[in-house]
Image (cartoon, rainbow, N blue to C red; front, side):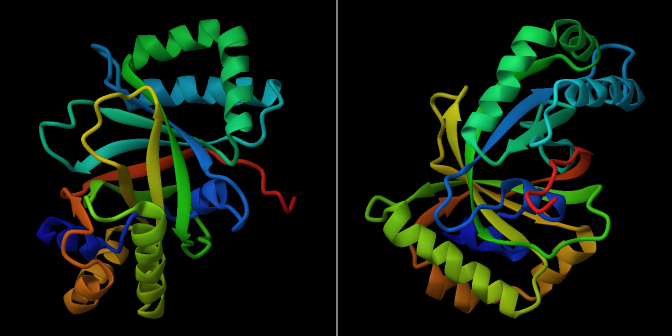
Length: 255
């Protein structure tokens, strides 16, 4: 439980800025679909090479008529040797069907472009997760770069997500919002591409920058955290923190 309390120092499992729009749901909607690639640069390649391929990919997405897919690349900032990759690709659609359409078009028509990605950043994993929102971050003027923290959490034996953890996450989000937090909150659940996970869900945190993350650190209330998350409800490891750069933003439903 102590590790979970330390995790809450950064404000919870969050995604800020434009990512809020990408994974936001109404109360009656289902979870958003999130695909994750972990990749490393090929010999002699770097971020500038990846930028060139992503520019081609954006044109390809436009040509395919795909307007409901958002994407970020994430580079480790606070990390350990266990994060043995250079960059993460995070892609989001508001529905599972939307993600399926993207994957079908990529399989059918993305061959040569996929080869270009592989020549720059070969990837050793590709997984799909379901994201559920608990606290919406404020809209940002410039969501092109945000901070994302990921924490692996296991639910205690005598607790259940729907009846115990979900209400607690909602209450924590409301408490943090009332104390000026700019974080948002989501739970990510593994769906495809994993196997043998040693966690039940990922508790993800995002802020606009590390100053905002630090403000949540300073405003952390351990007594309130223990009240909302009693001992034994969750066991979470320390978070990994990434600098996330937006690469594509889905069109808003309001447009």
